[in-house]
Amino acid sequence: MNIEIKKSKKPIKYRDALKLMEKRLIEVNKSNTKELIWTLEHEEIYTGGTSYSDDEVLDKSIRIFKTNRGGKITYHGPGQLIFYFVIDLKKRRKDIRKFITIIEKTIIETLKIYKIETFADKKNIGIWYNDKSSIKKVAAIGIRISKWIAYHGFSININNKLDKYNSIIPCGIREKGVITLKKINDQDYSKLDNFLIKNFISNLKN
Image (cartoon, rainbow, N blue to C red; front, top):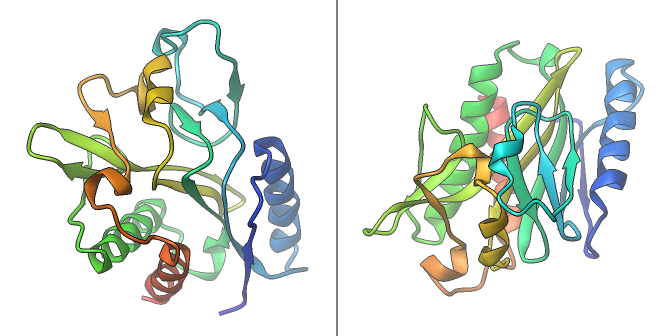
């Protein structure tokens, strides 16, 4: 599979990541370059997808970066793994629901390696964990399709600051919380990106 794997060690500004993906999208559409998988962390930022509303911002002093991905408001920052991609669905099935299922399957299968059981929810996009007291989101998914090329991606909370979510209604879901992998199971997640990349590529082939 002709996909470039890019891993950034230093935090990347959201705006810079968006520019790179949009440039790559144009090149992939012209068949001038490889598709892309890119793992990174972001500097602290709140981003609002195409379907968010102002009443989901609880702290009016924070700035929301409006972006063109699907979904609502979320927070990005250090300690959270971002998994971006630029994937050409013209080379595969032109099926957006199938592609989202591939993403969900990739995250769920990967977290099982760490003995963490999670699940997808058709009504509330993302990957969820039942911590007995309540159901909490551990991974957020937000994608955009342009010219049948999928880009943006998903984020997994490893050990980022959960209090940052108090300023917003994360992903527009009021009755469910947010959790990190370290709160679920305090173990070494340094190879999480490698497992995600491997499983994502494997699931794309199916």
